[in-house]
Image (cartoon, rainbow, N blue to C red; front, side, top):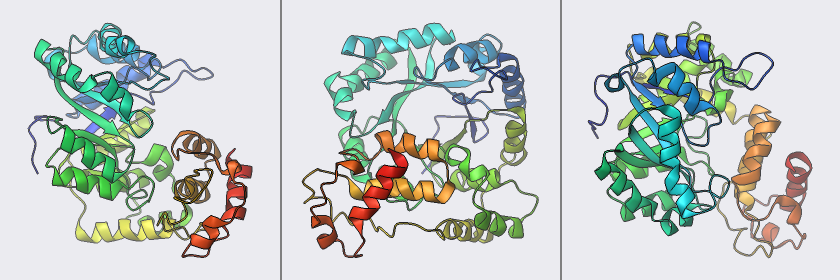
Length: 373
């Protein structure tokens, strides 16, 4: 699966969501961002990614990139977000591009995305007519290509790509940790995109930084294979090695991360079969923890009187057990699983009767509520 949307560019993309901050504040360090942009451009990178809802990112992108480089020397991606937290009406949603163009001074966006589509906001994009709006923006020359970023099931992705074959690319969360995760379903979503013949942009290849510092058992596997390779390099190269992947975004937060990424992506070499086996071993090592043995069969879900999405909740809890990042786990729990929270359980027991793994679901939901709520 080939694409020609990006020419003569390194396969690494610069995600402008996690830019460096001035010490002791939440203000973006624009001077350091300029140095990172310069290093990226000098190494042959061209693809930059920002969004209307990334606080301060668009202004920093203007200062570090758009004001300092010829417009035809880089690709800039931006996003329209129709979720309730970003806008309250169709008019506000459609005006986001005007705000983003003013903040960045870019003149146009090479790639423009419907941002973060999932079951909670999909109807807003349809209700507001955003798909047709994307076509009109392209006709006006305000954008070059349009697609969407996605956080939901393979079935929904297939539905969207079938309904909108005009989408030119899709942005997916892909990393070796989430490859077979029942909630993220990286592999299955990637396979859906592949069947539709649509180019893929990868987000979260290092899973928000957690794969740059994975649990020790996974580290041991990678260190034994190559003690000189950073843990992040295994994660980013895994995603970049997949056929049909157009670019892999990395939200770099300092020059050290930039230099490390450039060290293996400036002259990118796909993972060998031997290296793929190392990643597989690392993934298996990640699973050797005190996890909830849920197989995500969903036998428990249909009969739940409280409509608790039990497998999805357990997947978030397992991520916490694996990486120990309570803040990120609570954030994921607050919006990803859908339905009622674990504390809504009335202990009727139908889920335990239906579970083929014979899990003590009631007590496990209590554990989740105590930990993540």
